[in-house]
Image 1 (tube, rainbow, N blue to C red):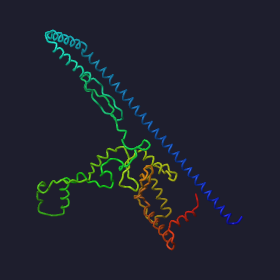
Image 2 (cartoon, helix red, strand yellow):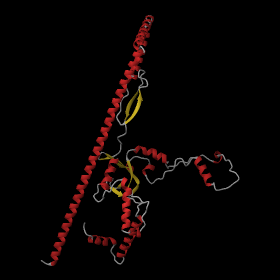
Image 3 (spheres, rainbow, N blue to C red):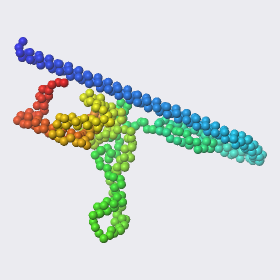
Image 4 (cartoon, one colour):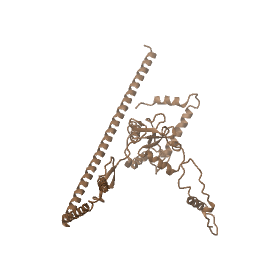
Length: 397
């Protein structure tokens, strides 16, 4: 076997080995992601079950309290009647009513049938009003609790708890039973559809604000006295029609989507995506929290200690000679935005405007870019070709 054939076989074997390693790495990542997604589902189910159990316990306590309070009021009423001679007074009232009714019946014997029919109809109407007033307030479905007063005369002033329904359904397009759409697919006002539009302040166009701004601007001018000017004489209340919305109008209109996530779209900043919070949480976890390439170092409570450790490592490697370490620096807040062609795919955004080592990182990036440009200066190929060659020399971890 010639040397060329041996080299070809060796190269083929290396390619197969690399392919096998790549497939194993991919399967490992997929299994890791599936495991973390299952853990997140279990945590979500446990949290929902715990919340339901807490609400159930609160409802049981509320019903027990209302039952106990009703029993106490009945006992107090019974005790009050027994102490103040309630039964005797009730008997006297009944006798007085029966005597009055007998006298009315004797006097009404000479009346016509029409009057009797009118009396009976009025009596039925009164009885109907009483029965309607005695109807209890129905209970709605929901979590928010309000209080309603009974309308009947017997239990006047009595307060009963009533549950009012809350909005749990949005009449919007959905993806896998979750709200997921964009503004351009909805029937919305034109000003709101474009996120690049600039709002105008609602209170800046008032006469008082403009007069205050003029006085502030002319404060440096010195004079004998300030003349008293009537604003109605020099101010013309002319209202021009404008298509620009005020910030209060936009804020009031945005309450229609309260409870949903509104975010910009990658490569289409003028449009806005509307989605359920669970979908956004799942996308963030798939991009950052559940990704095997990221390492979890802790929560927000350990941010100060983490930045301190990074600073010590920065000074230990003498990177402060390249760029100064910012003492007031902070870690950036990462987030995700959906992609323009497919809202179920995510673009990771990790801004770091207050990064403590931003200056050193910027200078190192400039130095690497300069080296790459000089490497391809006397060659017709582009820098990407050299980068691909350099990546093949790096040892595989």
